[in-house]
Amino acid sequence: MASQEQKNVSSRTDEEHVEDLPLPAPGADSAAAQAATSGVDDLLDEIDGVLEANAEEFVRGFVQKGGQ
Amino acid sequence: MGAETEYGIHAPGETSFNATWLSTQVVHAYSRETSHRASAGGETRWDYTDEDPLADARGWSYPRSAAHPSQLTDTEVTAAQIALEGGETGDPTEPLMMNMVLGNGARLYVDHAHPEYSSPEVTNPLDAVRWDAAGDLVALAAVRRIAATDGVPAINLYKNNTDNKSVSYGSHENYLMPRAVPFKDIVSGLTPFFVTRAIMCGAGRVGIGQDGSGAGFQISQRADFFEAEVGLETTIRRPIINTRDEPHAVAEKYRRLHVIIGDANLAQVSNYLKFGTTALVLDMIEHGTAPQLEFANPVATLRNISHDWELRERHLLADGSTATALEVQRQYLNAAIAHCAANGSSHPETGDGHTAGVLAKWEQVLDGLESDPMSLSGQLEWVAKLSLLQQYRARDKMAWTDPRLGLIDLQWSDVRPEKGLYYKLLQHGRMERLVTDESIAAAVANPPTDTRAYFRGRCIQEFGANVVGASWDSVIFELPQLRRLQRISTKEPLRGTRELTGKLFDANTEVAGFLAQLLADTH
Image (cartoon, rainbow over all chains, first blue to last red; front, top):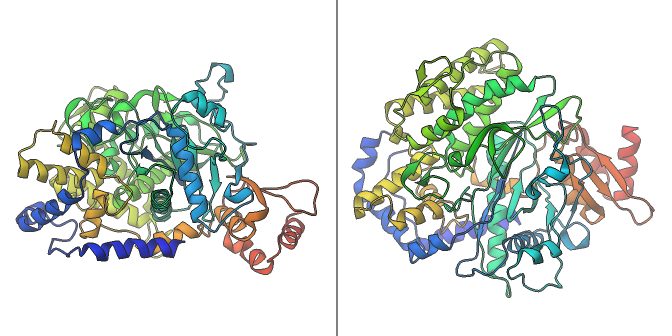
């Protein structure tokens, strides 16, 4: 079952043709991160494509009952 | 140690379904997904014999008649109760699946109106990260299975802690401690640490106040929901230090410290520091080396620190002086460095192999927070989320009240990698990994080898059809040739390991022979 899940994850990634962006490694200073503006724009564009439609309605509809 | 995660559950566009019933569908879906079936088609009943949610660590027990219904966690919700709650429930003749014990030693069940994954017991923070992340894959597998099932609405699961409409649900940590440590020492030593640790392990939140109506960003999902310093409750008047005293182990020797103040973490560095630093602070409390300081108003300061993401504010201590959250964390770090050097646990060659790593990461993160918090956007969850939100705000000139920012906050924690924004950053190499994807996938199927979870998990894997019940400290077998059930007690958390029981499993493919040899060995 685990291997099946793993396969699903990787095949989805393949389908999306996610391109590796030339970005600074984690922990690099934020000035360098901000310099990679085009990479940031590409990421935001990709996220635009997966955000749920109609943000206001979706967020309003997320109602939970109490938990711990 | 171990982690519990209650997932937010949502059937988009469907407002009429009962949340508890939806949660049963998650457990049911996962039982069909896994081959680790126990008797009765997948459900392993939970053995509630040793559950006592009203026992208070301060030495008394809360009267059952006075307890809030949500405090009675030692009974299961029935179909009748779900019907009383109202809402649609699908086919009422279908059995409701409330509980599963998994082949990796974890528990998957319905807690209140949420599906909850409780990780198997582990001995170190890296394993805590690994088996907690395995729970996210369990949740994902259930979501996929439900999406492919007719008659059940599509369900999304979110690893977050609030709906931003006054409701919060928990992600708890559990730490095994010697009972000999006085509880008042735990309270005094741990409170200043818990009030400040969100600067490392907060998950970030858009909205201020329990209903999220205040504009802005804060460090923690949970901070605004805490209203007391010490108490038994977990669903109402939530306390910084929870006193629930269910050891799930030999009660004379151990206590299980039940920590309810943490945020659910997807970011591995935040999750690692949450478990690793807390375990070190508890060790210092046990040995009397924890820093001695006290906030004047712990509950208010907890919130103020969460709201101050620039980490600039000074907070009043009981002695009249002031300190920043970073200064308090630095005191704990310095005390821990000295404590671990003295007991040898952080030694690079002869240490325990984990403490040195926790101390190094803790120091690196505090240094980063001190110089420029945004430099940690690849490591700390709240910084990563804030950084993404700020990029959106800069690009689209959004105010903090823009509903798209609320959506980014929510969708950050969607367990599906094609929708969850944390996973988007991870796929782009922007979030630091501490454990590999392969080892997380392996942890979905297999238990840790160095705790009693190994015994529990392998019992489910090998003899699931004969296991009629299980809990943290028991596994119950039913054999066709025996008239009564055989309950195996597992009250010592560090027994039942691969070293102690692996050969027994390997040598016996038949449950009767396995039990006979197990009982012969232990009697």
